[in-house]
Image (tube, rainbow, N blue to C red; front, side, top):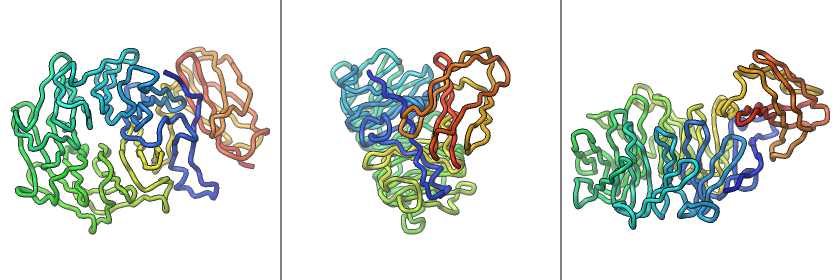
Length: 420
């Protein structure tokens, strides 16, 4: 295991385009992202992001620091991580082309076809249900692991129509929705009942289900190559590529977001679908020409708890988007209870006001966009309650910077701008 130095990069067009300030771009040149293709993203209980890559293993990102686990510096069995899930104990589950990996923060446990009933070592998806069962979608069947025993579902012992699991989600009732090459599968886990939706019994155009999304009102959305379809338990609504201007399918995920927003990616960009009572009534399109999206090929999507959208984009980029402005400071293990920074933008100095629960000795560090320290470190003593720290910015050129406050394992980061 090794840790990269602090590298935080904010993609900002100096022309002053406000929309571009809503994007942060990470890649192997400006951050600790270990590889040029991001396949999956998940968020743990400590608000860390776990990022699975092709060729680079899995990276833990604390919003200021990267830690990378690969098959060369850890017990990871493969250099690619195609799926990530996190259970109730905050244990991480990784899907690789060499089996399933359980990681408790210190130890790696490998499950593969030689030491378990896993139907294939090539894992496409992992999800964890409310009972902490781990569901694994492979290219040769579906598997359930309850912590002690495995149960395998294939075409030979169940009603599942195809062994290649393309997509997998769990709804609010703890039932499974499975995307295969032979249609959409609903599996009622309580009653052990299967229902198949395909071109012969539903209006979907294609039996290959690339992605499944479940909005907060428990409506099921699926993505075929050129359609988005919604199923509410009894009726279908179909939206084709030509009506909505959808990009052809490329992404494997439709992230769970607010009930009135649906995100769909493809090889021609990103689309935000706006819904009204389950019906799509408008769309917003993002590509490399009209937004901060660095490239048009969207591979994976993830929406974090702070309503930031994380997009794995082709040609080696991880893009983070929030229409209200990406603010990763709110997702750290916070040292402080709140920030007030003024003036910001700063000229000669800036005042940081913050609140502490206890008396603390705080280390202050300042960084530029590349992660280079740009001011001398300072350690100051503060009391519980409201505090103020004044720092000089007169020696800094115009630009965007980060001030990090640390006390032990806890830290907070605030972004500031110098503009004269």
